[in-house]
Every structure is written in C-alpha cells, then in structure tokens.
Image (cartoon, rainbow, N blue to C red):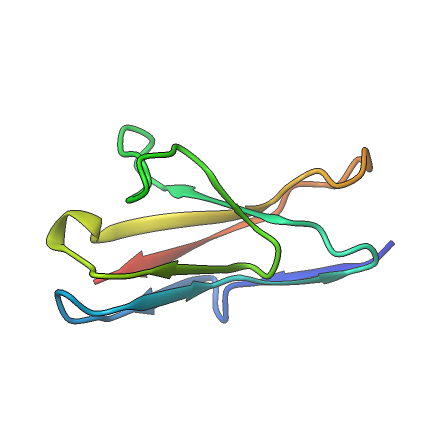
Length: 96
C-alpha cells in the first residue's frame, strides 16, 4: 500500500474575491486511494455547508459564492478506507 499526500505545499494559500468560487485541493494517491476529509482548522467553526466534516473522493473542496465568513484555514486529512488502517496525514489550506 502506497500513499502520497500533499496540498501543493505544506501550507497552501488560495485567494478569491468575495462572491467568487474557490477550489481547495489536497492531492492523495494510493492503492486503494483513500478519501479526503475536510474541516475548518478552527474546530469551533463548521464548514460553509453547516457540516463539521465534508468527505471528498478526489481531494477537491469547491466553495461557491465565497463570503468573508468563509475565510480562514481549512484542514484536509486522509480518512480510513474499506476498513484499512491508514495512517492519517493532514495539511492545511488558507482561504483569503
């Protein structure tokens, strides 16, 4: 089992205009490829959807109609997959 995890850099920054669309990306490769869990780095804030955690299969989190309330750090991490004991890896993406 092999996994490669990155968010383009250890601390990626994405800049977007208010009302625009942002795509936050964490690249994960492996066999099998694990899903990616997204959450706000500030644990007291839910995701823009209102959920505390959002799971993506391709590692991409798309945020539409971005507001100032959505600014901040987002954490992406690998999730367990098909009962496999995958070592969790994580990175952060800053949305400005």
